[in-house]
Length: 456
Image 1 (cartoon, rainbow, N blue to C red):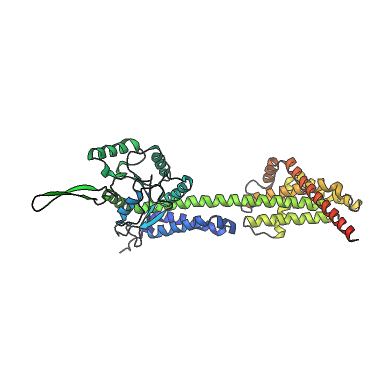
Image 2: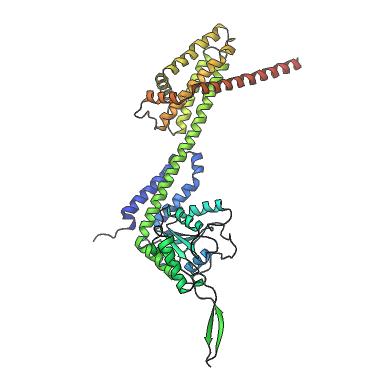
């Protein structure tokens, strides 16, 4: 006899679990800064993973204020847990409760539970913050309950359209139906099903309820035939909603959980990838510019022939090592030198300019015993810095492709970078940095000279 299959053996579940595991694995290659920025995403992915493994379902309740969202939750739970208030704005954050009735579960999962989450009213003040909270709740939810108490207005319809974009099943509950006559109830339901929500919400998912009925007058007949009246609140009526939730759980519960988990994992994987690209792009551009400026200033102000060339080479190697670290590629100094050589050879005229800066200008410094530094500072420094900038941009492209020049090859990569780089603008900025440094050094030298004069 074959052993019974676990729900996790289902193909949809296998796909969802693999998608979830893949999304979680993305965190392993993140830097500490990226992990800090993605901490909330990591927590939510773990929550979704746990929900998927246990077969648990989350219901989120939406609606305008005073439509009876909290009353509906209390009626579903059979106990008073959500605050009911006639004043708008009572729900300021999301709260969560568990349906303790064992019938509310997904078949085949021993630990299956159904959670209900209340959200802030869609028309409450401080809307931006509460809209964000509500959207996050909707993204985590497997089934959405949208509460209205009359014909829908523009804001409610707009909110429903936005929630529908999340690809979650939605139940519209027309609450407080006890306010209407039987004829009015039928007319309202017909209007919502055939007009307002046609093509948006299936008719079977538009339900009626009276979660907190108004007090009614009852006539009580005594033993002697006399009658007296008494005001009494009827019991909540949410049976239609309960039945529909149970139908969905038993027919589609497994698929709902798997689909939601897979969508969530895919969304977070995209977000992790995009954030890592953005962070690494920002960080690498700062590093490239920092090294370009450092090389241009260092080469320009070094009065010793040849020493500026040696120092510039160390800067290039340091730049490559730093970029490799940003993209998680461990390379040696020898590898870094090979990358630099490949880039400069592919760059053509940039390499020639680098040769000039490395030979002609140091020779002038030597002939003038270092006095030529001021004459050569701007052109030599700017060329050296620009070369470092091109090397950095090309190396960044190399590391972005996983330490590979891809099918393009280094010449095509470098050619594209040279074509899209505003050489004049970069060199002008580098010259400004050199002049700023020279000016700063001049002031420093003046202060030191005045200080020595005072001491003397």
